Each structure stands twice: as C-alpha cells, then as structure tokens.
Amino acid sequence: MISVVLPCYNPVDGWCQTLLQNVHELNAALPQYQIEYIVSNDGSTRLNRGVLPEITATSGILFVDNLINEGKGSAIRKGTMHAKGDIVIYTDIDFPFGTQPIVEMINIFATDPQCWFVYGNRNVEYFRKLPFKRQVVSKALQLLNKLFLSRHVTDTQAGIKGFRREILPEILQTKTNTFVFEIELIRKLIKKKIEIRSIDVAAKPTIVFSDFSYKVLFRETISLWRIIFMSSVWGDI
Image (spheres, rainbow, N blue to C red):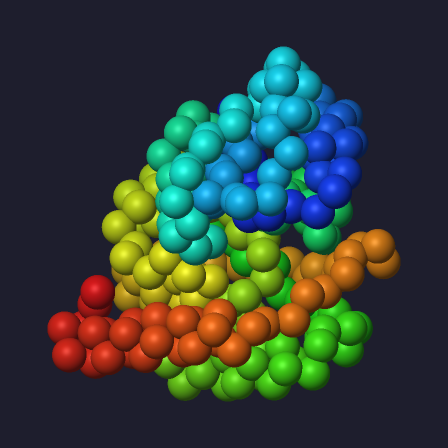
C-alpha cells in the first residue's frame, strides 16, 4: 500500500475538486497499488466543511481534523501517524508538482531497495516564479543545506518527499512544527547514513505562489536557529 499525506491549511476555493481530480489521476497511473490519501487539516480557519462529506465518501480518503494550527511539520507528523502504507509520500493539498513526481518516487523505491528517502529538487524555472522575498529565503536555505547538511542535498524545501515505512519513527521524532522541519529530518537521516535520492520537480503552470509574511519569516528563522543550536550542542535534537 502507498500512503499519500496531504497537509492542509486554509486551502483555496475549489480545493476539493482539485484533490479528487489528482486522486483519480494518481490511481489511474498506479493501478497495481492500493493508495490511501490522508488530508491532515492544520487548524484551518477558512475551510468549506460543506465539501467534507464528498471527500470522506470517496474510497481511500481520510480527513484528519487537527483543530489547532501548529505548522506544516506538525500536520505532516499527525498525518503520517495514520499512514498504513509501506511507502509514504507527502505533498501539498493542491498537488503543486502534479502526480508524475509521485509515480517517479514509487518507481525509485520499487527498483532501488537501498533507497529509503526521496526528495523533490525544484528547477530553476520554479525559483524564477517565486516572489522576491521567497527567492532570497530559498537561496539562503540552499546555502545552509550545503554547510549544515551535505553538499549533495540540493533542496530541502520542495513540498514533496517520499520514504519507506521503516524510517517513519524518524519522522515522528522530529520536534520542529514549521516549514523548516525537513532540515531537522534530513540531518537525522544523513547521520544515520540512510540513502537519499532526489528527483527534479517543476510547478504546475496554474500554481500561484503566495509570499511570506514577516511573522511567518520570523517564526521560521527561530525554528531554524533552534535546529542549528541544538544540533551543535547535543549533536541531535
């Protein structure tokens, strides 16, 4: 079985139709697998609950309703706690990279038994479409990845990752709730010498990129420095 975890916070109008369309597309692309979809709501304040019966009535979709907004890292952890699959993929509720990268990840796991974790590596065109503030933040994080993680890890912040169930405990043991939790996670995996691979991903033309507020940027910075500080003091967090 494959589990697809979809963190969700204040999704845009039409998110239900987008979800169902991608569910049908991915099921058709991987007919040999049973796929479950776990929508992990992260305390959304703008979410049309009138569409929930349509979602939950669809076979293979579970809606996990977390009432308090804690951050993307928390939403992913809470979603993966319900995952039954041998392979777990997480991506955003609007499938910003489409379903093809998920198919590619599944193929990697099927053909490379030594690989336990796959991350999406965003292409140059993706970064060009980002608002200027996000471009600066992304470039800074790429530099940090090389210094703090590994020169071989090119991108930690693309919103799509896949892993084997055996490393689910590593996911659940992360402590960071915000977007940068993946830096904490990948550092743990590197220290355990887990094989990591990447695939190139590109955003769908229909995706509209939002900008970071200064409040969010401050919160992410605090989380990032916590990861760096705790790792330097204790060697882990």
